[in-house]
Length: 177
Image (spheres, rainbow, N blue to C red):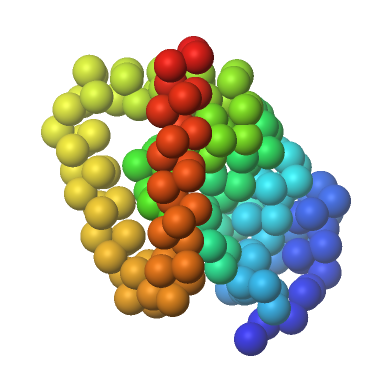
């Protein structure tokens, strides 16, 4: 298991100077909670740090223990600039966490209306301008979800009840928007 490094702390606080020295290995190293610097930057709304980490080779497929990507974390917290930053590098908006939720689902669940609207707009544009690419990304997300199920099977089983509640909440949010 990893340890918290100065790069993890810098990403959390938005201190870009140490991050400019980070190697690809440094920016993708998980801490004891499986959080990488890029996940921490996204979760804490540190857009400048996120930008530096992306330039240093951050792996956007890395997830935390719940299978949430940087986009999930930024969306749930309502960090629109981080979401925009991640969308600008063509992150897969269809990725699912262990509860079977996309970043859009997380934004809606946490009542981050502005971020949810942006993610819906992005998905709509992608589906209408490049349906083949949208389909490819959905298939890739489904394969990644299968890998998550193998890696975190017990976590997914425990989250099933939560997923049904989330689906009910998602449906209620869809009706209210």
